[in-house]
Image 1: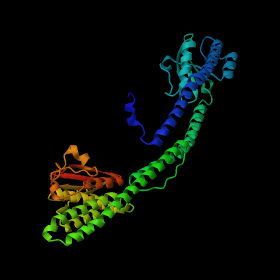
Image 2: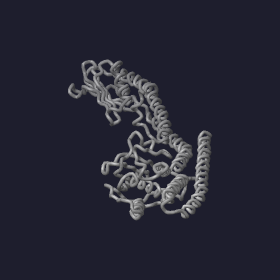
Image 3: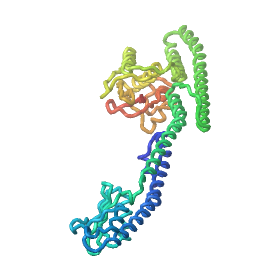
Length: 441
């Protein structure tokens, strides 16, 4: 619960999260090594070198005679300063800096200044500029002295090598680990693509690979896919066989009714037609989305043909342009998608007087909307309406046509097979039912 706010900033992909798990320990280890090296090794070396410089400064000051600096350059003083490569000069009060002069990243300079303040009597300030020289200002026997010497006397020669080596080998190890990680995650991505394709009704070839756990998940997916495909095939064969067998007695009944008087045969012929229509719905539901493979199709042209066929059949259906409808092609099973839209149109004109169809195509989704002016479906019963063999008498007027409650179920099944969804709502334009087939591109 405490780290919930952190989830918004974490990578969403498995590769990004795995890379983060890999990089965090490496970066943390480098920081720890850097801090330990700076505090223990680098600071210790600087302190030792500073102690040596303090002894040299004390030696120079001990050989310095009273009086002006030029007059004090006797042989002993000159020999000491030349041996130590240290210059000594007397400066006026105004030339002595009040504060230390250094750059912000000069860690050894800060250690050096702290040691001088603690161990050098009369210390005033120090100039640690970037010119490779160090100038120490101090007060000695009433005079302001400036002692200069090489910066290498107080700093390690190559302190950056440790950081360079740590960073270099850290980058190398990270690259190698990233390549290995990418190879390990490739089977997971293939499994995700195969599962997504199967959810959209496509059979993408997939063979389990990778680590033992990934192979186990891949084998489980393959077995599940095979069982589902066998179940769908058995359902299709069963319903198709039942529908086919029932057509023979229906044909005999039609022949028998043709021998009767028209007045007596008319009610029975309507019952036979209702049974035939029910069988057709059973067969459509059994076929599901098994017809054909997805192909790039222009949804505007397809829906325009569906509306044209409905108008020729005498249905009051119009095609209304959608705001920002877009253009392009979407991979669809034409026969199945036509059946889904046609079922929505049949329901719309069956329970209402007219219907309107619109197509909205964006960069990410396809939406086909069918609206009618019928009574609609209550919000609390919309989930029940898309179930197979569900008929909502209070929501729909069943006197205007027979059915077995498979129209919306077929449309829902086809939308799901395309990786989409069927959404039911209330039409703001016509006041009836609003049915949207939304499919991701």
